[in-house]
Image (cartoon, rainbow, N blue to C red; front, top):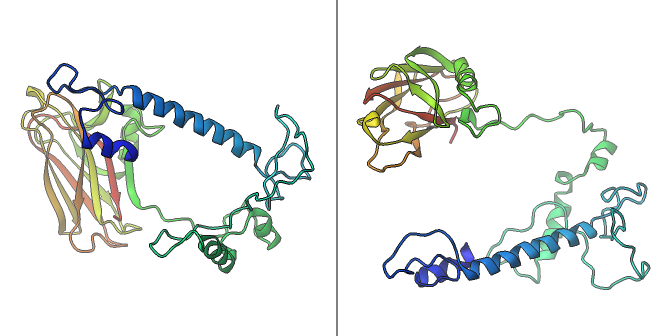
Length: 310
């Protein structure tokens, strides 16, 4: 996309890489690309198939395990004639200029000062100075660490709660969605899970005035923002649809917003509504309460939530 963007933007009447939007004279929206994009796609697919094959053929081989292509001998690339690959015609011939295995760790930052002349040296020096960060399984086991046990603290999760209907493996019907939310709902007056035309969400089944409250006691991580994925639609059913959301910690109000659930487009679309909390947000050990109430119209749909530290 970055390669052809300037070409398309510079001449929107070209139709090698984009649709022929002016085929009938006036602009008409179309999405099917023409010749150039098809040819480019063939080259890209062909390149990555060849790249896959050559990468596989150059994987390191463990001499102690004939059927393994990955093992302890990680210092050079070797061809391994197995899984249908033919043997080399001259297996003992060494080709000069072969690449060494890349240094461990991350490559240097791409800055204005970084040059092709010194990038290998910088990467190697960084890898050596932080060798303790890039040890493999064998080296860790040799030092007495078990790869089957957690001997370090787990990474903190950024969100107290996050979900997106129909995208998670076990969140694809109303019963499962209700099970996901139930542990966090302290009161509910008229909201339930519903699946309308394959669009699962949390909806005010009792109409105007329906409300529910979510509550967390002594949060284990800070909360600085809450984000709602909501559906906006059209027609008489959605006219005036408005949801009021208020975020509290104790008696202190940290955020409040009226979220509109309707629009003039003749489509149903999903929007992300992010509410930043005042100050430093809800701190560790504090309580968190979020109140929802349908204040306009007769329906609304929440299709995802993220209550996070950012």
